[in-house]
Length: 226
Image (cartoon, rainbow, N blue to C red; front, side):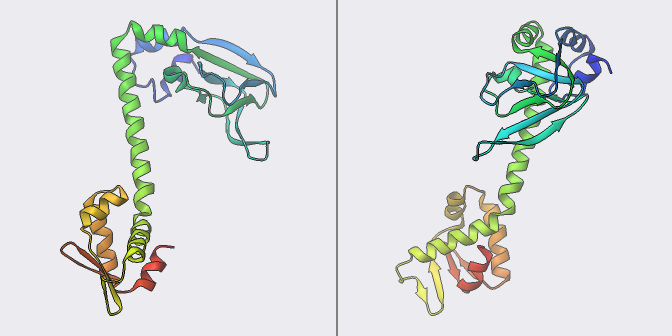
């Protein structure tokens, strides 16, 4: 597989023009590493992108016990270290050769010089980064909102616990708080809180009035918070 083809498989570069891709591929240098050789360690300065031409690379992170666990084993055609081209930040993991391995390496200095002369390449890479950020945001939102009902239940229970007793009406407890205020406490939209409150209302766990949330079944609310 050609270096141009390998580079085009990377999301960071897929928007580059053919001429730009060829110029970038010309900057790659080859390196051979033996089985067990360390390519970089966690905390090392991040300066290079690596493409595996042949062989395998183990990506590991240290544990609290002082040993290391493998979080990925990368094979022919795969790449790692791409974000180091842009931020130069310390490595977040270690990499070592799992066998005799051939690598193609793009150095950060060469990459920055490449970008300095090519406005289109900069725009294409910014688009790729924007797409990656949006995907990350979507994933974070999905994780957060999947637990929103649980978080909401816990917050309401906390507020009931803070209540002095003045809001208690028989077996019910009234909290003087708007849905907007509650959403701000949880760091989500009012619409999201309203949707989850509807679930609790439909189950007869809470009732809502203007500026008030009334807990009708505290024990079932506690089950929702687990």
